[in-house]
Image (cartoon, rainbow, N blue to C red):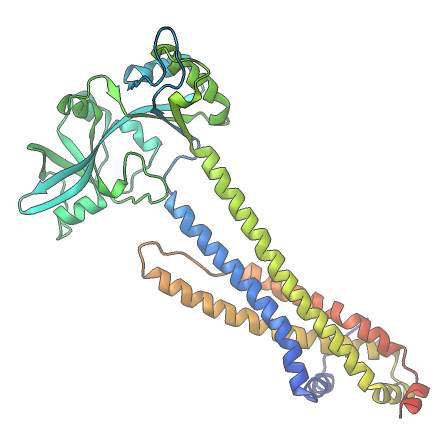
Length: 417
């Protein structure tokens, strides 16, 4: 079947569609609304996913974070409800007995510390004690200087890395603070860098923006923490799921601290791999609903087009019969009806794509003015596929009316008259 789109054919299609403008407009609106909603939902879900991903940006996805909690079962003479603490020695225990682990790094945090520089003060900082390998857990975004290194920790250097909020409060002019000193509780530290990351999704020992990060050995000595650490941050080697080695990790820690091996409440394990899996499944569900709602609405519009074309064919029985009488072939009648259906579907659908893209561009512009910009646009490939889908649906919508038109004979025109 060939569809001839010469000038006369195109004028004839337009004349047929404009003959009843209100009906064509209302019919096309169903297709317009279906495509509009589909593109809007696709672009909106894409932007939302980008915003969520940015909140978790820089955080390792195969991470496990350990916290000590009270025991809930008696063990070897110890009563239940006993308090205990993770130790710095647990790092070596895990490294020797759990070879599947890639990174094992301790961390301590002291909340609500006041940080000053001359006349400037930030009173809600959290002093974090970490090692250089903490970057494998939460990657910093350095605006100035560098992060801590192994020498800083080994030599207990009085250096620090400032978070974004701490920096903007202590250095309101935005100058490079490296080499300058700040005061925390009467002790002075030299600034070696500024971490511009703002991990709103996952915060380890407080937000990175509120942190003043110092070497953990210095923090343990300066704040009399002894051998205790607040948490251990772990990452598994490539190809190994953290959840698979969790029982082994728990066994090593419990054995060293005399805890019942079956007491799962004595230590809290935060497995970020499960969290990221939940987020991925959430967006899979959102994408499924987007396509389900969008395609369902679009299909309803296409069914409306098919019904209206059936009405149009019924009204044009005389016209079609005369065409057959003067030599029009069934193929030509078929091509005429399907062409009208395609044009109506495409015009309405393309308007839906254009308007939805314009609205998404406006939303993207508004969000770009915030601290978390995101792209709410649909891809060019998605728009092209939508146009092709509209063409196919236009053909499908016109098949039944066209089949009905092909069955009309000249004698039907005379009887209808």
